[in-house]
Each structure stands twice: as C-alpha cells, then as structure tokens.
Amino acid sequence: MAKKQLFTKKSMDFLEKYLNNASPTGYEWEGQKLWMDYLKPYVDEFITDTYGSAVAVINPKAKYKVVIEGHADEISWYVNYISDKGLLYVIRNGGSDHQIAPSKIINIHTKNGIVKGVFGWPAIHTRNKSKEEPPKPDNICIDIGAKDKEEVEKMGVHVGCVITYPDEFHILNKDKFVCRALDNRMGGFMIAEVARLLHENKKKLPFGLYITNSVQEEIGLRGAEMITETIKPNVAIVTDVTHDTTTPMIDPKKQGLAKIGDGPVVAYAPAVQQKLRDLITDTAEEKKIPFQRAALSRATGTDTDAFAYSNGGVASALISLPLRYMHTTVEMVHKSDVENVIKLIYETLLKIEDGDTFSYFE
Image 1: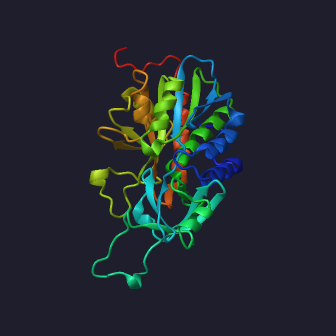
Image 2: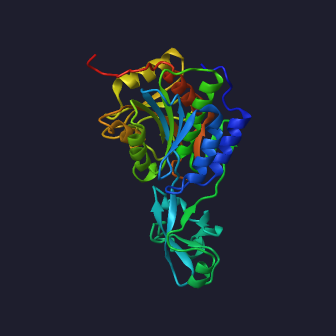
Image 3: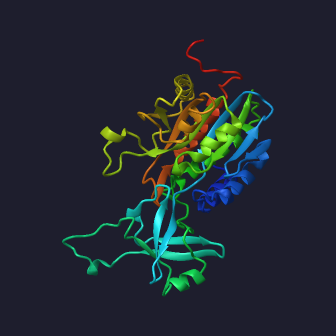
C-alpha cells in the first residue's frame, strides 16, 4: 500500500473546508474550485464543462482512459412561494427530507449574500396530541423574521433562491466523521487523496487517469451523463455512499447488511462489469483490505449507471462508503472506511493495464 500518510494535516484541513462549503445541486462551482485548488499540485491538467463538473487529469495524452469518480452536489431546497405574512414555502432540490426540517436553521443564498432563517414548527403545547400532524412538504415553512412579503423581497429573497443547511464538520469519538453532505463530497475527497498518493509515491500509470467530480447526481445522475460523453473513458470506478443498515428502523433482510467500520462496500448489479468488480475484490483480498458486498438489483442508483451505459458501454464498478443517517445534517462515516476506500481504489488502479478490455470473450 501507499507509503505516504493518509489524513495529513493538509488533507484534513481541505476536507473540513470542502465539507463546510455549501454546494447545492446546480450551484456546485465554489466547491469545485476548492477541490481543483487542492488537486493542482498532483495532476497535469483540468477539464470542466458548462454545468460545473470538474476533472483532474493525470497523463492526459494516453489513449486508454480510466475514470475514478465521485459527485460534488448536496441536497437543498428552493423558495417556491412567499406568503403575505412573510413566510417562505419550499420545494426540494434533490432528495431533501421534510421530516428533519422543523427547528433547523437554514441559509438562503441571495445575490446580496446569505440570509438566515429557521424552519418553524408549532409548539408542542398548541398541537392536537390525539391527532399529531407530521411535517410534510406542504406544511413546513421558513421564517426569516420578516413582517410581510414586501420585507422578504427587500432582504433579497425571491422565488428560486436556493436554501442549504449550515451544519459543519465535526468528529465524534475520534473516528466518526459527521456532517451534512458527506453524500457525496466524501467521494470527492477520497478520489483526490488517491491522486495525491499516486503523485507522492511517484507511481506512473500506463493510462490516462481522469479524477472526476460530477455535478447534479442528486437529481438523476445528470452531471455524470454529460461528462462521460466528454471523457469517453474505457473504465470507470465510481465511489458513492451506501446505507449502514444496523441502525434502528432499517431491515437488513430488505436493505442488505452493511455497517460502518467494516470496510468499503463492493456492489453487485447489472451495471457493474463483473471482471472489473472481480479485480477490485481480488485486490482487496490480496492487500488485506476489509470489504463488504451489496446486491443492487436493477440499478445502482449512482453515477455508475450513467458511466456504464454511455459510449457504447464502459466497464464500470461501484465502491461505496457505508454511511449512517443519509440525507440528514448528521450523516456519519467511519474514518477507517474512508481510509480503506482510498486504499482499495489506489491499489486497484495499480493493477489495471493499458488496453484492458475486461471482455468475457477473450
């Protein structure tokens, strides 16, 4: 495995800054600038596209192209309606969870900067205890302290403003990383660390490596659909998050079994090319990297699907980071799993040779 240290002070400073920066779907560019700035010493060039996907390239003149990919966006809300009383009603931008919204502080992004607000909720004393009404997309609302609609508009808030949560990165019990948007800026961090280790360990790859941070995954894999047509890769190894299914109210018989701290989760699915997946699992076993397995039925629900079915078919695989409390502001991952995803991608890349077809018919 890599001689250079994982989780250096520089990499941890980057991770914290990268996670704390808001990067909602459709507005990822500030986070992408941070990501590219961190990667600049380790790569040869960058590719960006109209919607904000960013690719750091090592050995760009090579004909054979391998992608390692994460996605940069986070879930958020849009202002959808402003009432005469100055309250804001919202619609989702991605898979935002309405049930966690009440009592959350929020940031509204305007041309004049951030406007603070809260998702208000009726006090327990005023609710009908025999018939509690749950939070729903049509009854949660934001209060920014304005007396009416006119004052809201004077504050620079209008329909279409994007809304994020300000919750920032912290560490629980020394080895649990907690933040909003670990889904999936941890992916962007992990692939960046792979590039750093390749550079610092002076590894020369026999192919072009395209470290890809796609946008708009949360609304349908859109960034990956676009950028794969630009890159036209031969191979894609995607990393995303998957559910830890050991927490309450999740049935592992339905969702499969995965647990934070037990290693990366290697996917089995139609979109996952079996020979590439076998290379990953064989590498894990050889290098004694712990891993778990998951069966994903018709689709992975990740950017793997976008890469696999593009350009006439791209050999693709998915390595997931187990995560608790997905699409909340307290998403949680284990430090050792982050390390082992980085190690597994790094070691797998060292086994890929120029021109590998992963064909079943050779």
